[in-house]
Image 1 (tube, rainbow, N blue to C red):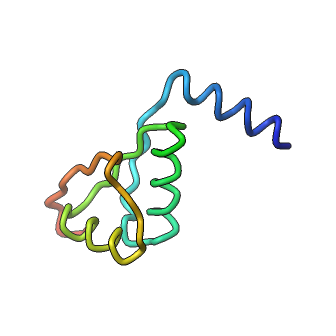
Image 2: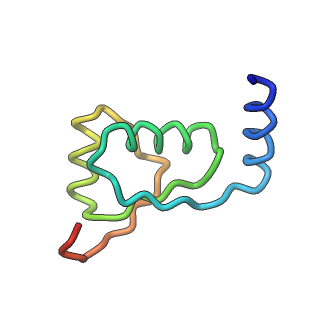
Length: 77
């Protein structure tokens, strides 16, 4: 199983894809985004209010320095 995960990670690093995450208020998502960015498996993008994303990350103790944030003005967010 570990060998399979290593192969997947190695392949993903060669051609990292962008993955959009609108669920910035879920600390599990924020932690996953942090790990994905740190391991360079993909290029995570958080979508929503930059201020709210930063607040949620601070509360969850997550580092999003390597994560792209796309500001959304959508009132549903």
